Structures are given as structure tokens and as C-alpha cells.
Image (tube, rainbow, N blue to C red):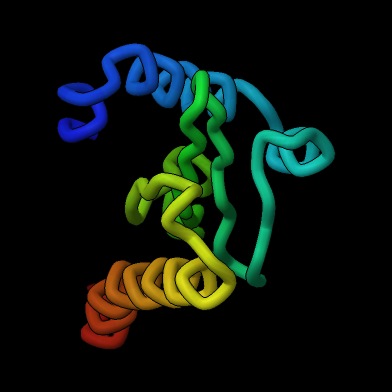
Length: 112
């Protein structure tokens, strides 16, 4: 977000506003709108349009937090995403989700 704040302060405010809006909605409601998409079984993508710029922010919802937390994995400009780049964006989000979950599973296996 820092690079967006430096180059596009209004865009950064719009992104933060969309995140706030997402937090006040149920996921099914957000999915019916154009706010988010669900390109995989566990990854969502927040879609933000701010002036001439569009951003995509993949995220996941850790089941261990009971819906109290969403984890954004990155923020990219839409114009840099072709089909292959979008697929790679989703795969990176999946990897980061697995990285988040793995320590939790190890702790559960140790009886914590």
C-alpha cells in the first residue's frame, strides 16, 4: 500500500474504503456484487477501480479465526495482469494461504 500511497493517494484511500466496505458485508453479498470474485475454492479477489486505475487484491479467510480476519496477499494493478499473470497471482495467494496454515497444523499436531 505504501507504493500506492506515494503514487496515487486517492487510490490508496479508495482501496482502504473498499476493504472497509468488504468488512461490513457478508461474503455472499459481496460475491453477488462486483466487489469480489472467487477464482478458486479458497481465494477471493477484491476488485477496486479508482479513476483510471484498477487494482486486484487477492485474499483468504483463515478458518482458525472464525470469519474475524481476512488476509490480503498482495495488491497489483489490473493492467499488468494477463491471463497467465492472473493465474500466477492466484497461485501465489494459494501458496501464502498454505504458508499461513502450515504452522497452525504443526502446532495442533504437537498438542498445543
